[in-house]
Length: 187
Image 1 (cartoon, rainbow, N blue to C red):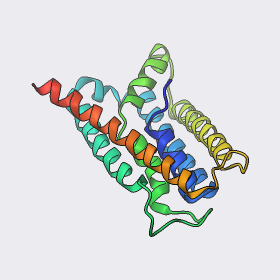
Image 2 (cartoon, rainbow, N blue to C red):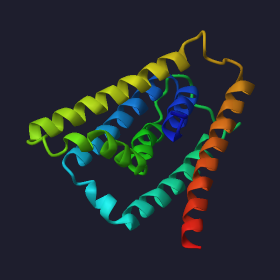
Image 3 (cartoon, rainbow, N blue to C red):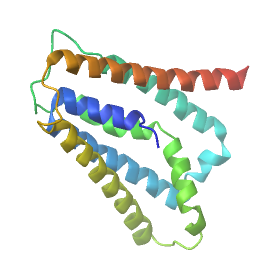
Image 4 (cartoon, helix red, strand yellow):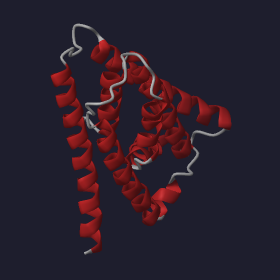
């Protein structure tokens, strides 16, 4: 699986805001992923499958979010968060990047579809959603710990800015791809 916007947001938040910001972003990302898992398991996400316009609206909104995140990730010379100072806007980006990514719903549909007819009850649905959210959050926390480790962390400000610019460009290109896909589907 290729690195996606979630990884870009979490690594960028870790590099710009420190370990705490990265961990909080990972936790909110896990909450978002768990929420999507709950939607899928309770079959609510079948609406997305039935009404492709909702999926398109989410994808286009996600492209807009990626553009905004790309602008936010572009390094600013005048202001820089001191290491380990939590930026709440950056942290909430971890949840937003999940909510505007309908591919997560399709991914969970593919995984859970064989057992959707056999899983009943809120306790089971909630248990699966919590498990998925915790696994996601733990994975990204491990990424944060590696990215913020002094052996791996880039202390030179020039390299931090290069990484920030690279992450911005990656997110902008992802947004551009989504927009082009929707333009081609209309034409």
